[in-house]
Image 1 (cartoon, one colour):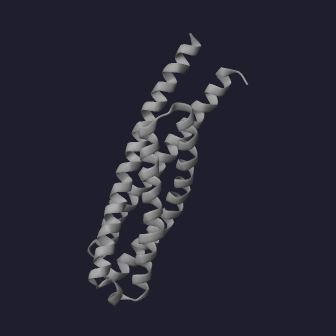
Image 2: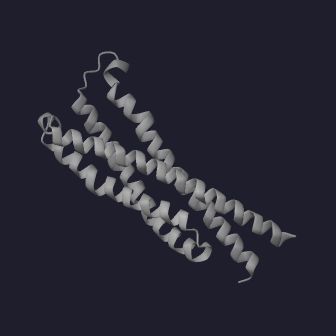
Image 3: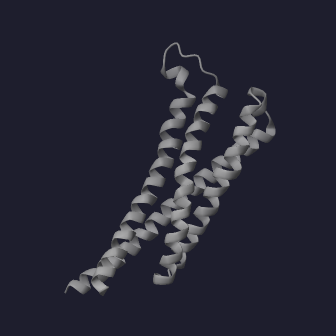
Length: 173
């Protein structure tokens, strides 16, 4: 395979990876910024709607469970892409953000989400404890840290693509 064709494949893979990172960041923003306030204020938004804080939490958890499928898949993609990318470009910062993102994804999806679900299975009493409050606050911090880390990984890869495009333009001339 000639260099130009290989280079185009690398460029396509980089843009596709950037798209997937953006999808992950966007999905997290939609869940945390758009959905959560509407769900937890549903009774004040919809006249006559009787929904408790516990019921709102159950709805929000169902959104996060679905988001976790996307995040776990993204974690696998980050792992694969960053391994190949490191051997090709030796970009340690991108690998660092990728590794932190993977740890936070799996921490959120496989540790905090199941703890919240287990507490909700106990009913309203399950979430009215100091332990649940602590777990919930920690999960929010992990979620925010993950969002920031994925965004940093996105930015790091934007710069990588800019560098690739500069190399591509040099090959064209």
